[in-house]
Length: 149
Image (cartoon, rainbow, N blue to C red; front, side, top):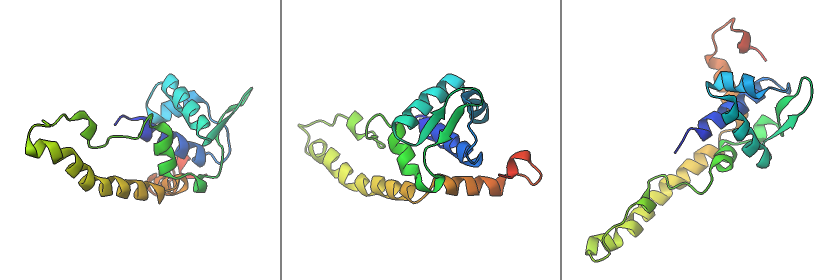
């Protein structure tokens, strides 16, 4: 797994925090500690998923396409994954099909790991971007300019 999910979540939380004010890719990149090109690519992906939209022109930037309460972390996860993730890299293994154990290992592990993957999806679906911003607000130091709004 790469950083796309974490950075995309950061972008969406920042946009939720600004409460409808468009934000440039440069500002988002500075906050996330990455390059603006990375942010622009992720914003494009998030736009295709219907999570953000862009406002062009002076004072333009990126905005949430729907309320933060209506965007789950599962939505974000699905948007930034090119394919269904092989979290446990089972597809990368090549057990010996001539070995009794090797022949059934993949199927056995898939059956055991399936509930863990489903639990992850359920947990991500239960958390909205609004919840992320609420958690962030609790962690911001009092008097910090970003602590309000």
